[in-house]
Amino acid sequence: MRIGVLAFEGTERALSRWQPLADYLATGIPGRQFRIVPLTHEGFRNRIRKRQLDFVLTNPAHYVGLEVDFGATRIATLRNRHGSSALTRFGAVIFTRPGSGITTLKALRGKRLAAVNSEAFGGFLLARKRLRDAGFDPLDEMRTLWLGFPQREIVLAVLAGRAEAGTVRTGVIEQMIAAGTLRANQIRILGARQAPGFPLRLSTGLYPEWPIARLPHTDQALAQEVVLRLLQMPPDSPVADATRSAGWTIPLDYQKVHEVLREFQLPPYQPRPQTLADLWRDHGGLLAAFLGVLVLVLGASAYVLRMHRALRHSHRALMEHRDQLESIVEERTQALLATNEELRQDIQARLRQEEALQGGCECLQGVHALIVRDDLGCDQRLQSILDLLARSFGARQVVLSRLDDGQPEVCAASPPRHGGRSLMHSELAQQATARGETASATLTSDAGPLDYLACPVIRQGQTVALLELGVDSTGGDPAHLELKSELGRRILQLVAQWLAYEDEARCREAARSAAERRLAGLTPRERQVLVQVAGGAPNKLIARHLEISIKTVELHRSNLMRKLEANNAAELTRLAMQACLLDGNN
Image 1: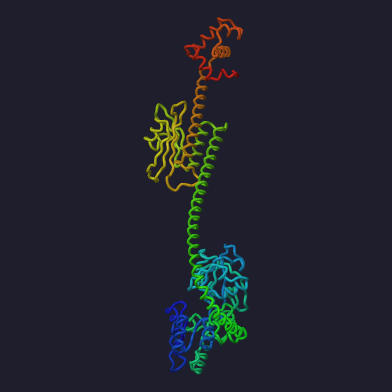
Image 2: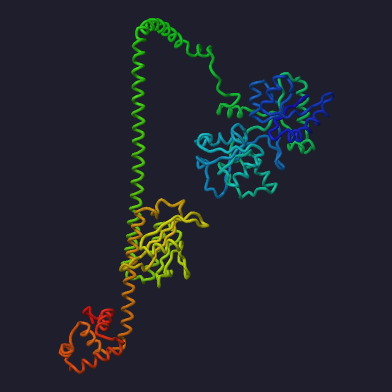
């Protein structure tokens, strides 16, 4: 006697679990041998058609299909073992991680759900029915992740974050907790339910466990012996332990399983195409009217065919004109597409120019804002200007060097650096210094191609400093100014002019400070005499203005020459001007 078993975990696992049952039946039914035949869903159908099976042992949904299609009759229902409990019904659990923020079934809409497959009864269909009762179908409004068997992989996938929620058959979570691969606080049950006498976590209704069924050709007396032998199996027997069950009970009602499959239009309740007989039975009146209309149409068609011959020549001429028109339209369309493409490229070019101008304006405004700030020292202002240039151009390095006896000496850099020659390209730097013109080139560095530019800072016709920039040639940000563009060079030249003004102001300040130090040892009267001398007044006029004698004026002038180490009145005048004594405030 061959018992077909659904091998959802593979052939070897099916044989290992159910062969002890076959041996148990053989020992209690004399003259009969029983063999387990592990099969897939399609394998059952092929074997049953060839009458190569006598009994089937499968899940409830599969049994319902065999019952409808082949007349299989259940003879007993499995009592599944979970700890000390023997359960004849099962359901499904819908769960998520405690930290997922999902607390209700409706919150699962739009989330990813891990399950066995779209036709697994306990591994998906029961959860699908529960979610549809909650207001949505997971196949339409959720993203599904099919993981197959074993179902513990679904739990692990949810814990790993591959899915926001999962569904498994009841008992899987308890088995993982007992095995130590899962802690109870690692999951949250959604839509939890309590059923009398059912100790497992549950989110759905309860449905009967796996049945064993006989096929129509199987001897009924033999089936009765099998039923009696199954019902006599002790729940704690070795055979029950091997099959991970607690024995068998009388066959339960599987009508609820039929209802689930019928609701989702799954085999054996999938929609079937209507036949002509069905159409005539359901729509006979309409079909008769349709046939009458068809006869009228056929008569009219004969008339139309005669008219068609007369119109054929006109139609051909019309088709030729249509082809010509389509050709003209195609040409005009291509020309319009080309014009649109040129316009699009022109718009993009203008947008890039506007972005560049906007970036240039922001850069110049930033430099101007830094120059007019009174709260910044010279070095702070200079460093801020270089940092602004580095951000605007996306530069890898910006360096400002002052020329001391023709040799560049770094005075500021962005990012900051101290000491040494930091010229990026000495030859181009010397060329820019000597000619007083901007020099640029594309260089090769360890970090990749580099666009280099050296811009001289010219004051009173002489190069007093050199501004150098290095920008990555590839991968630039479109928001940055282009170093090679005319706008970028003009901005750098304007910045160089501002730096020249800044350097001139710095030189004036240095000369003023030096002059003030030299004048620090003068008396108030000597300062008054110095102002008069610098103003070009003769000794007699000075004596009159200060109400002193000419001899005293000459004595003060002599002291001024000696203290200031000046040789003539011109040098005194220059010192007074450098010290700002002639601005009317001293």
